[in-house]
Length: 586
Image (cartoon, rainbow, N blue to C red; front, side, top):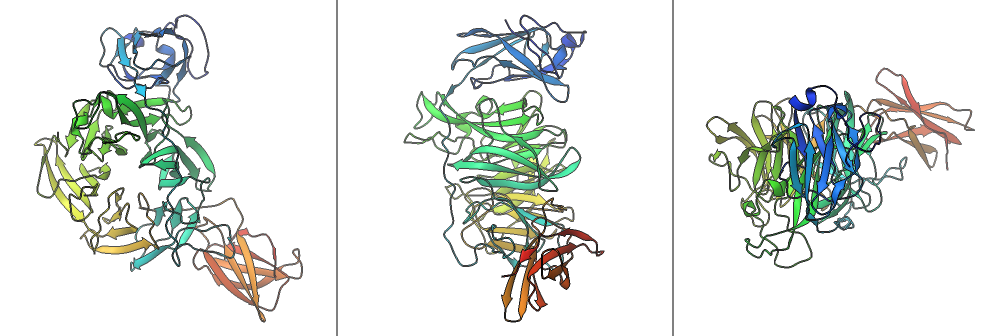
């Protein structure tokens, strides 16, 4: 029979589990897969939200082909739900019926059902793209010879630091892949390489459990779809948690957002076979990507919420034609951003529907659709967008979007960052501002728009190598580009303080009677000055030179020829933050 065990201390049992108290019959419980869902994975868990796992009562899970399923119930870390994990997978194509004594949203009598999809196989891994080498495309450091980060060249330098550091994740190497933090004017602060054959995207600063953290996605990319995992690191650049999709889905490159409830919103792609015979070039057994949004309970890895495009967005809404040849799933929807909106709903962007959806966090029901073939809003002059990315509802009700404008086909002559005012009473969308690069850029994929606290807007140009900050008047106050044919999926600016647990690094070079010492400390943001210690042995070092901190690496000339040197990092008050290991001078 079904169910079993309870809650925070995961347990196992046979037979039925009896609920305690009357809450089980009165509280509204949200479930995923949703009642009537058509594309559940064979390995899906069954999520119950709105009631403690210990109060769920008896749960009987029956597959139309596989019969009654045993399993276990695990509690969500917040105590407001749990998931039934079947002992064995369901069978493709079967209907699964779940019987409970609960007040299930969208169901009658505590019983609901869903259909299991026919999976189309795993998404194969692919080697990341690599930009052709050009002069100056990577940085090199004598004191950090293991690092080869992609170079960013500032083409318009601001008169002052504009609100924080730059966060990018170059997608095309060309030597190493990984997230980079750069200073307000473009100098490197921190770089981390990701595993071989992986790339990184969506690198940013966020908050987790009240503390600042760094987050990014890393994995392989195939046809614009990612297969990987999401990383959380603390301000000392140490791992905190790794998050991955579940229910048979790996985390995708497009979104990794931490919520105010300390959960994770991630994207995923699930190849399944569906009947697309009513679509031009479609077949009765068409391989299609189901675009998936999931909310993950980070401590347990359980799914708290899931949204499947094939349950809500019909194939006919897509502007992407069905493929005429086989071998790759039809990416009819292409999810590329998820956001927990200020009112608690979830905002989802579909590149290939040219639409943004606001959906219920409880039932998945669509509250409204912006743009696309089924817009809930009358789109005002110059508000329509195409192949968009990074849709974000702001606290004042406006929405920011990166309007790519090109797919192909080319719909707009230029890509742009836009801000729209949404009137949800009269159902109108009005253009508030648009930011365009000069000269114009056309990005066929990716991109981001990030409003700043001072009224500026940071725009990352996706597949183009640029990132630009515009002031409140729409004038560019900062512009930079990668050296060579590189790009970052998104580009952000955040204030950041990094305190690495590693030691500073040192290297030395002798030319005639002068020794040049090189000092760096990957990720340290509080260093204001460097001191050089030198001596005849590694244990007898005294002060021989100093200099104000320059860029990532500072070169300090000292007189004479020391046998050993080390570097000391000082803060603005002269306090020693860290000392390197002594190195032998060649």
